[in-house]
Image (cartoon, rainbow, N blue to C red; front, side, top):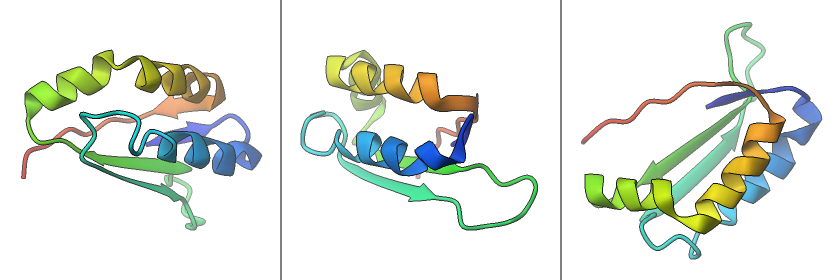
Length: 87
């Protein structure tokens, strides 16, 4: 989840994140949402990715296409919050 430096970049970030679908083999599924809440603690963009196991998540972290998207995301973000969990 991210808070952006400029909220007008939310759709650009969403499109970039969604571009990983089908291009990053370890990413089983992806969902990206742009905040619609006016709550003061709300963040701007959320990424939910599913992975078969922790090895797939490790592969995702090393994937070159994912890293290229990460560079763009890093340039747009003001703050980042991460939650990793097993179902």
